[in-house]
Length: 488
Ligand code: AMP
Ligand code: MG
Image 1 (cartoon, rainbow, N blue to C red):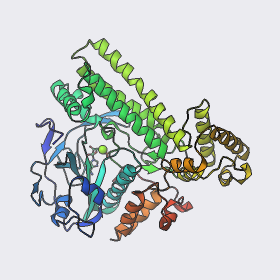
Image 2 (image 1 turned 60 degrees about the vertical axis):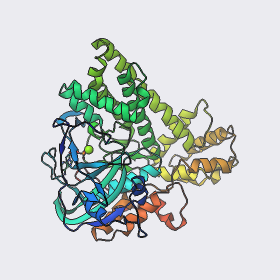
Image 3 (image 1 turned 90 degrees about the horizontal axis):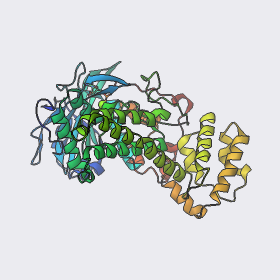
Image 4 (image 1 turned 45 degrees about the vertical axis):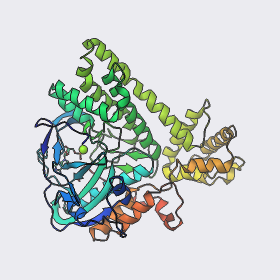
């Protein structure tokens, strides 16, 4: 198992709490393949006991035994405030398969559940399942989701709901919060063990560096900088970017009240509980940078093993300054690509920013605008561009299209090749809230077909899928503002 730190101060042996009469709600054969689970012709595991295992009802299946399930301890900053000890309050790490950790989310109480019931509801489990797989297909690093198993067991949230268990996999679920935990306890031995474990298993390029902890910090920070640029490019808002929800591998983890932008709104807040907008769309890069500052403080004692306090601070401070640069470079690359620009020219960034401002002012559908932009020809007559009708300030957008078409003329790709390139970065299908909501409402009536349909569509987000054209449309007016909160 990659996460090999053991001991009472690190994790607790924790068995899942069974749920009555489990049933399949969703299953991803692609993820099952990654961990060598054999699939039958019905697309489900051939070995029936997997249902019981993924429900948390038993710990062995077909010769595989998960003999030491655990819950781990971490701490963290929530909404910018130190929250102290947290931990896997409703996630249980069963073990690893093919070098990937298998975790059950919602499998009952752990030592770290605090006031919580250790459960997750059907609605949030379906959202996590679908979004994990959608993000992966979009090319954005993420934990993957294997299955959702449901039960009629009641769970109390604002109303009475039913329980579900989402099984998810990742090379490691270590978070910034794990580092913060040992640092806050001034447990340098554990902190060092954790950093060494990360380097040995996931960042081997840092071993050779004489300042290997500094280089680990830089590598984690760089991955998260690129991750958040990826989120911005597909219009994804995470919703709860607390340091305990930030992966030390730069993966998207802990899907809660996330949302994809429908209409482009630069300060969109997807989490109903985030009244101050700390985690609004445009603040995500800044907030990720802030989380990397939390990691830097946590790792300070490791640098002090080889340097003076002052030197260590200076090294980390300057490493932290690399974040905005790495982010900006990645963001510029992604947005140039979204516009079909392969060359780097002066004025490109202004061109991108002017477009985003205009899209914000007119609340243009983010995904569809970029997708349809690929259809533009370099010889188009301005007045025939259909997208210009989506903008209120026509004069402004006409000027933008004029400048954009001129810019396209300095590119070498022909229209068709550019369109193909743009269609590989501008998805046609994203997990819009209203689509998830429709699948959830059916699932709550025990019809899971829509979850399966969405999994299929979102697994190929860049392809034209003629039978599913309607899934690319913006939400109907009454479904535009679905509110999602932390209560899940
Ligand atoms: P989240 O914001 O969902 O990542 O959760 C923050 C912390 O609260 C983590 O330590 C979770 O394990 C814990 N938590 C959230 N929901 C529950 C629950 N229903 N039962 C126990 N712990 C929970
Ligand atoms: Mg969390």
